[in-house]
Length: 351
Image (cartoon, rainbow, N blue to C red; front, side, top):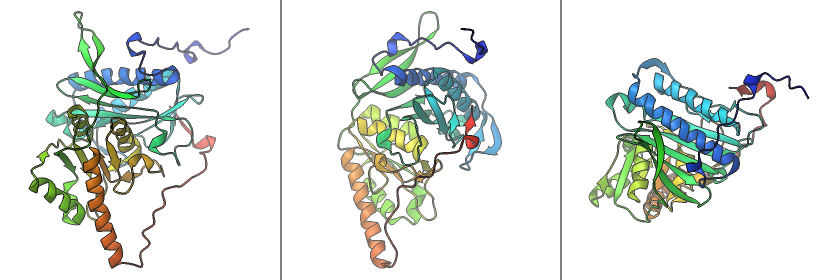
């Protein structure tokens, strides 16, 4: 039978690199390979390209650099080539972008986390969450099937969830004798201990009017905890996973609003750290139990060693209970589920 489709519409699938066999199977493995390819390319971009501020802001109000836009497109290109990703959403484009209508997965990502630190030559990262296809509104982090956290520092490395062994492992980008890049597995079965004395307090200006956060900071410093904070969520959480302990905490207040996005940052990182034996929270429940209510959703975020996350939850809960007792007329209940209809065909955006 004659095939009337143009050859450019039928790109050949890239063969699976045999070193990745054992990470996942079928379509999920292809998504992972696309993520590895993206991280390798981003690493080169960061090392050998100039960084320019564009003088514009993204849809969350963050100042944009050209690297944000370039890496976002680079990741989209690689995921599209896999032919198994139905759609993507990112911090740069927080709306569904269709890649392959028949794909099996949705990928949410932050292409460059900590981008405002690039001009200071600090470590930055990329965050990826892999979800099943469908309507994301109404899903929770429990639906995530895979995730990855990459950092670009003195070396480029990535922590991924191995869907076969159901553990976390680290891969590092190396050079061979021909100066070609290749990936090497450098850590297996990464775990997070239940206790820690290391803390990373983000959005700390919120202590001005968030009494629970102020009390936590006073407790950590008074108790001799070790401060490890870079200003980059990806770097601090990578440090937490590599050390096998730690606490990352970003809490908002009336004056200092919540900073972090559920889809592009919090849910993927919570997925990884809970798979390693840690715990996550929005101050009330596990971050993985928070229902997706939209593509712009922000949250308080606490993640790391289980006992320390639970300690923060106790401080936050006690303060909320105190406020409710002072304002009994206010309804403390919170709605977590909003189920908007599936987007109409004409509202779909194709990449």
